[in-house]
Image 1 (cartoon, rainbow, N blue to C red):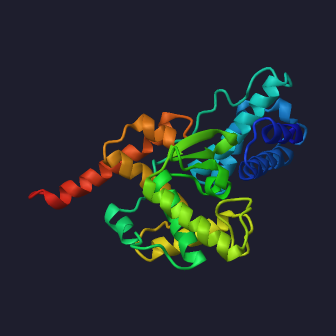
Image 2: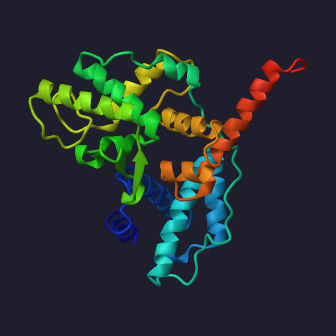
Length: 292
């Protein structure tokens, strides 16, 4: 049944390889728990008490609530699948509530530091212009790292100043870009094509050998650039996605518009950035007010 479910989320739901790997691990962990503590119980015979025992077991392993909730989410999806296929009469997780977790306020880069990474002129080497473009794409569009890796030249429409992005579960959205970013992209094209002596590539961002972009390349580039200007505890590409959203919100952008630009399926995921704004206001108030 687990194999059928994994095939379902891969072929029909089109989940990413990373998500499928996480689901596989979570389901195998639960299956091993059942084998160890309820030897004669099958996956279709699981009840609320067994699930509560599983949560206690995870707690004893010092897993935090966020990690436990992720495993419960995997199980909830699995049992919804079994319910849909009529292998069970009800989802045993229907009465299991998610555990309370502390809300993490996303870290972002202040605007002044962003400006310090702005190049006055186009870099003269392929790696330098590629790194600049990676940074600007993340900051100016809010794209995910995986989305930049799958970005193709034909997805960029210079006449309309729009980028077509394929997000999670292959959902497409359009993101506008500035004339300045358009000029940078064209300069990158010119240097890339000259450096690699080709005009045909599987992705817009490529390696030094012209091969398709991969997540590690994006991470190393952004980590190096952010580490040079910031003391943030996190210097991953996702920080620039947080920065994109926070700067838009601080400048008065509508939350629903930011939701669409980020490709969030629900407004709840976007509302986390309102906390960033509130914390920033508190910080400014404390620093600027005479009695702060």
